[in-house]
Length: 150
Image 1 (cartoon, rainbow, N blue to C red):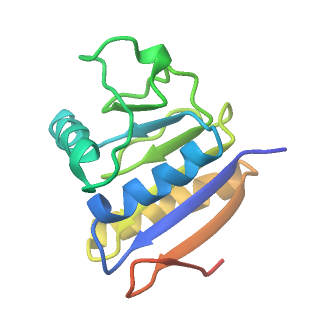
Image 2 (cartoon, helix red, strand yellow):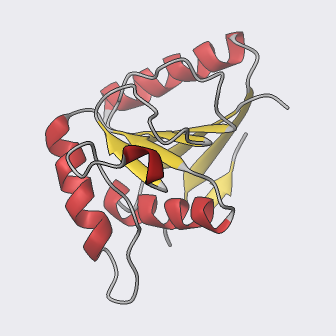
């Protein structure tokens, strides 16, 4: 089976609200995850957020400063590394993707209110299509859920 490349178009709720829900679904499937951010600062902010996003839940994760990267179920990075041999790679904040061939799934999350992010997502779509990946496009609903559009 080939790599599934999915595009998640954020419209009504920010990444901080949407990402934890998708990460929980990955962990329910026993998938290891890498979340690649566009900057080290954003990586640090998400690191703090994933411990506190919910009063009754947290997402086990780490960064290179935590060490033991190979054991992290969710690894946050601003680089193209994959030290936990993740099944799924999230690309947020317009992060430049590494080679995606080794993953089960690659997920681009982009802000629909940012014209540059939209243009870049279109380019990533074309790249994924030309590489022969299976592609899906999900648009955020007003309630924060997802509706498959393509």
